[in-house]
Image (tube, rainbow, N blue to C red; front, side, top):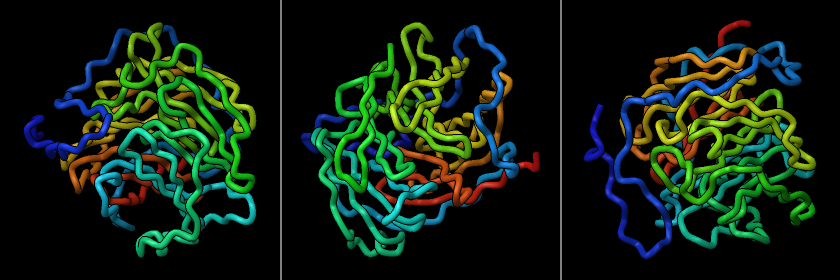
Length: 307
């Protein structure tokens, strides 16, 4: 596994953005926190299973400006008209006043670089943790431990709520930095937020959210150290972590199952083709991962075990 020297150099632009210069190739788990075996919340999908394979990345588009070194791109797995499952959304997240949400009719339009519309968010967005779900953009407003829901049709914030005790703006980021303290995720069961707290001593905390009010429904404290992993996502109520943001041959290295309250080590190959993974999210409608890898918007096919 290449050491920190293999990571691409940061372009010396005058942008107030955090990057950590080194990354851990081994993941030391923090001391085991009290965990309770809680049932999987609200799973109605009979096609659920455990992640067993991730395929090679497929490139859909490339950002041309420095603002697009890091970013988020996604589709809504449960869209609200006039939007569809093909409507594609993108945010270039380098900088301190990130407010532009690009809307494309389909991924092909994104590849050509022609947005159908540009939404200007009422508040600037922090980092690469945003998701689109049920007609809303869920994001972390800059320099806050809050979450907000921006209604895509009404073009206004419809809910905002703080996550009690959540670290933010560089307290508990993923290993690559970038103020990735608070990360949202969507799976077959709904909306999640991935973060850490002082109480959890930097281990990943996973909470299920009400998508209308942003109230926390349930919370799980894992024994996976957040700074020790590069990114994470949720599939079928299980949290999965990525070992490295820059090693070309990384792995999905841990899984935490909310149904049992237990974590286990994994070693599922995961390719960082462009050597700077800043975002990865699961789309339950398409059953694939969406990721942003050094200016490139990519997807990864996945395979789940038959439950």
